[in-house]
Image 1: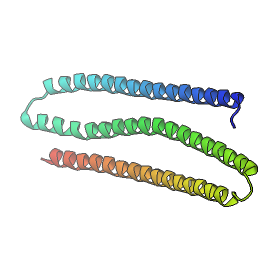
Image 2: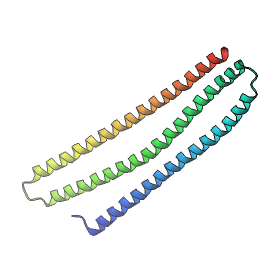
Image 3: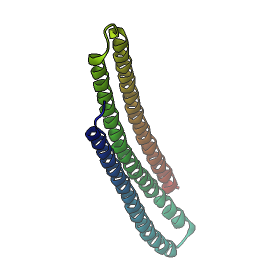
Image 4: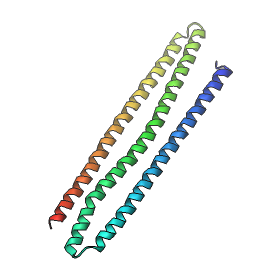
Length: 183
């Protein structure tokens, strides 16, 4: 049986976890706002510089070369922005996953303690039921670990795919820009 002290301690731990996760969520939002402010400032400065360059163009060929020269840096900056966005999201998500895993492990340990306590106080002849309960808990634990491994592998694969797509987009922009400049 749980004592009043154990219940209070569990509630306190849950509250601390909630506040910690709330703090992490706010940190993620702060990073996102900071990233967007930096991107907006850079876009504004680049737009002003590009407008000045367009005003100094003497012919259509020079305008086309100027426009082509803009495409590659734009693709690279878009890829970098997307990468920062992904890093913020995955970092915040990892904090939440870590907290959830810790809570699950703690709950499992407490449940096993209750099962062990019940086994010690169980009437004679109930050993089979206790063994079945422990076996079920162990099976659930193994299933949870398998799911966690699968999620980790899927996350790693998604990150690798994201990096490949970003690199392909930047390379395509470089090729397009190089072709436009040759004309």
